[in-house]
Image 1 (cartoon, rainbow, N blue to C red):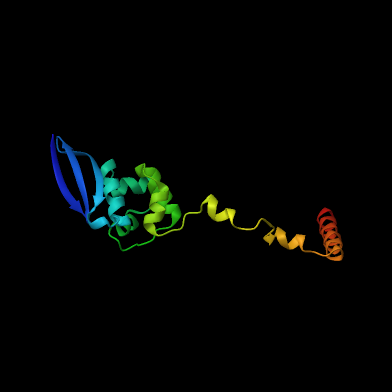
Image 2 (image 1 turned 30 degrees about the vertical axis):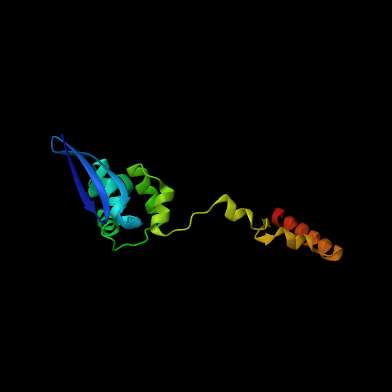
Length: 150
């Protein structure tokens, strides 16, 4: 068994080699506090699992050419669907991949500040109806429902 240290894209890695096979790689904190690029992180994760680009393609349906572009940093922001497949294949955190790719992550807090809606209309708008407007709205809804049954 031998231990070697190397640097991949500014991130320090430690590889444990057992009889010529890579048993795994552990990403340590990047130099100068900067975050690993998405491509570097995915490449290190793929290698840590011992998968080839073609094996990942077979598992995920993402072409090995596109995987190579992501790892080589020419594809900067893969879709959330692609990232989801890669997270599953590599056993890594999907949310972390979204952040590294620059995607927004919805949270309970962000939706808590939004008004409740009904068919895209804020419910607060319905509260502000006059009695006559509410009656007209009820009549219109009854008309739409009747039309649906016919």
